[in-house]
Length: 346
Image (cartoon, rainbow, N blue to C red; front, side, top):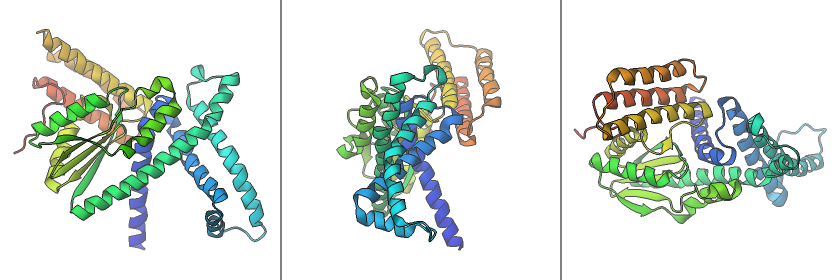
């Protein structure tokens, strides 16, 4: 029983990471920044999309449908033909509910009405397919990557992110530099072309204005003892144990000042924007030969502290924001460019 509980906990943890990875960047492109109070609705949209694909498979492939029907503990008075009819209705209606959920995620003042609202609801069909495909695809990629890691007797680590619009190349440059400064010599390699498929699909469904924000090619930073795969919503690190630990520390220190968010909710990302504004202002002052005074920095950060004191977000996101705030203060007070004080190798 203890083993079963541990297994369920591990699966739940992995599923949570998968949802975070799938929703972070994709939802930003599809729905914009999503407030914390609507994160649950976003998760329900994604799970509904997955349920829709499973239902659709049950209709298209009779063997799958039979398996689903036999797996469900149905009361004796419910005929299986009714369930099949319900599956057909669900396959037709669920994407519309996904589209309706996407409509209510939008801010009331920017929510379309009339014919445009109908079009938005009908977008639930491609959105449901996209989100379900992304979840399934990431699950398969995760299993394959884990198998490769175990076969090599390597270890792995993940850092969820949401790359800024058009910021993928900047992030790659920053992280490669951070690894080299940490004594890890890596070379760039194009990632497998198939790994870019979810991002391309997101760009197509999101529309032409957003399509340009999808990177043309994903990049892997490689060495004989380390592989870092860089996605718009995840940094996947695998390699020898010491190399992974070193890479994770170097990358985490640089993420504070690169073109990526470390949180997913609208409220948390707004605080990240304010922290980034502090970094930019201080950097510009240093370039112009007028470094700011420490009391000015204290005043700027004090205003952010007041926001953090009442910020209603998940504790994990709050911790990330507070760590970023402390790192920025430390780097600026010691006169180091923010995010470039890579932990020493010895």
